[in-house]
Image 1 (spheres, rainbow, N blue to C red):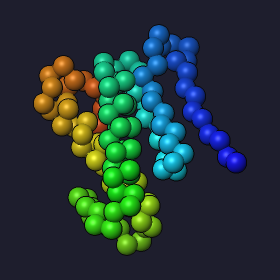
Image 2: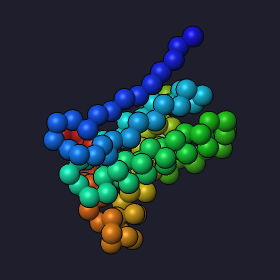
Image 3: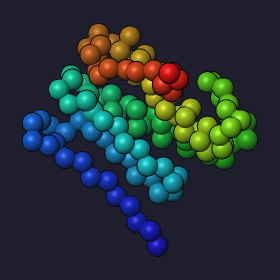
Length: 118
């Protein structure tokens, strides 16, 4: 039997750890969200990323009628597409939080995902 766990540390500079780790063996899902130490509300951003990613993967696990709001890449497996969609939805959730809550406007930088090809 295989067991898994996650561990994160504050490091030598920060006084709090904003990182979040998800270990969901039932889903076979392992996510890490870097809380962007030093940014206000980095812990909230990391938690939102983890929870929204887990929600989508769980909701789409047994569904044959899955919504693909960012399209479906035929060159990737079903699970790769699910994970890519989960990450993009998490990114969208954080953008929405930052746009609608002035208290969370600085909840960490948001890049484009997936990154643009160079």
